[in-house]
Image (cartoon, rainbow, N blue to C red):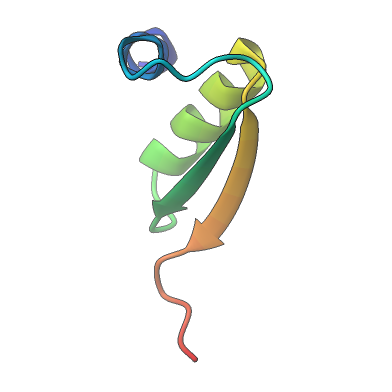
Length: 53
């Protein structure tokens, strides 16, 4: 799954060193996205979708 997400980042022209905001609930998709950012050299910025003001 991380490789598929990596292709999406590559198609969107996200390069190593760029930042990616990850806003996902606490489920399996979050660690996949986070791990792929790390493997791709992209800086993962995590935010929880349940955050309130």
